[in-house]
Image (cartoon, rainbow, N blue to C red):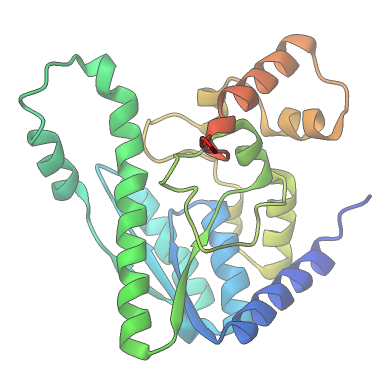
Length: 249
């Protein structure tokens, strides 16, 4: 089925409005990374709820300054408030408390990468809870993951995969860009090379394959066999991020 970006953008906006009306909610808190996904999510919520009900937050943690600059471009463009909470000192304080453990840099590399989004999500939920109490109506934390990322588990469990509402989780990377075009996300952000802002590598460099190939695998289209195996292996290895095993008596 051909993807109609304008139609889908309108349906997402209606989905947001309906959900907020049904549950008597007020606003949303979004971590603005400076990339396309959070920009598209922020744009959709601004169109659905109005700019005064959207709170954007930048959460640098040993991060590139350009990401914060790009986040401000998004906030200025859509007109929502943007706050900055620097988590670098928090991250360092935690790391310094681990002196009793013995480890090598390679052994903690993955732990360091995943700690950052977990700290960020804690901050977003803190702000959402504070605003909900202050304004006596609920603020939700919006997720910014897309379908391609989720299929291969390119997300941090209890970090950036934690949210109260998701509006692009059923869109492929290509479709996120098309919706971004429709709602007017600045092209400098929309076509910025995707990266996690943590490892100094692009998403596709870290994964070892292209998002376009992930979409083809999901859709059952032809992909080079080695690439297909790599994508499916990544998918299978990360199912634990969406399904938690639990014993039942």
